[in-house]
Length: 140
Length: 160
Picture 1 (cartoon, rainbow over the protein chains, first blue to last red):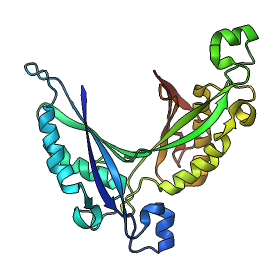
Picture 2 (cartoon, rainbow over the protein chains, first blue to last red; picture 1 turned 45 degrees about the vertical axis):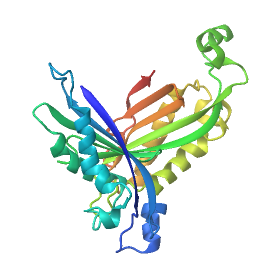
Picture 3 (cartoon, each protein chain N blue to C red; picture 1 turned 90 degrees about the vertical axis):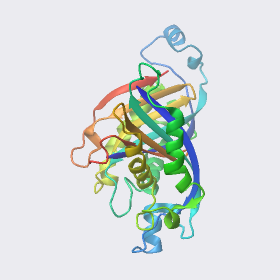
Picture 4 (cartoon, rainbow over the protein chains, first blue to last red; picture 1 turned 90 degrees about the horizontal axis):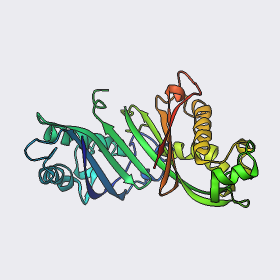
């Protein structure tokens, strides 16, 4: 069974490579390359897979999952400039794909137990753009 | 492989009518959707693209390049059009959203290689919401791979 918990955070970022010209950055990243950055209201959906516990009837304690999301994603990322304040984005471009990947990396050890595993991280950068990371993606 | 989904919106009109059916059969099969002058929807189109994340750029695909591709090949064809009258593929084809999804999937597959030949990513699904309550999804095979262009559609999922 899959259980999904949603969380939101707002952060600013800029997607550009210092090794490229302004024109090249604009061609690859579009407006996301504007040098001084801009922000998004990110929406995160975290899906955990497992069977309901025979006693509690729960796949995962949602209070605990909420706390994990707050501690490992929301607190370090909310109202931050990702490129300057959230590793590894001082050296990795904070695209939606890289950010979703990083969130997976942070959550996977916290969510994995004998009964549960992280099945999917879906990160909406805007209402019209989202990235899915699913189990197995990191090994690829 | 990670997937990126991009959403687009377009408004278009259509009339559900099959030339293979009589007037009475069309009216029975399609009901209100067969009204002679047609009607319109604000369609929401989603395309999912899966592939490795480029180590340097952090991208599966350049979003401006994907936007340009969809604008050029899909939105210019459908946006603010009468699908039956203005979109050549629907001369004899009923303008159901199942068929709109299949036509768009075919267009994406046919043109992907020309635009993204140097990209390992491929389009994996086309999803269209006709209204907030009706959604249609075509899962694409390995056909948009830059290595092996093919044209088959695996299946159509209809969401209630």
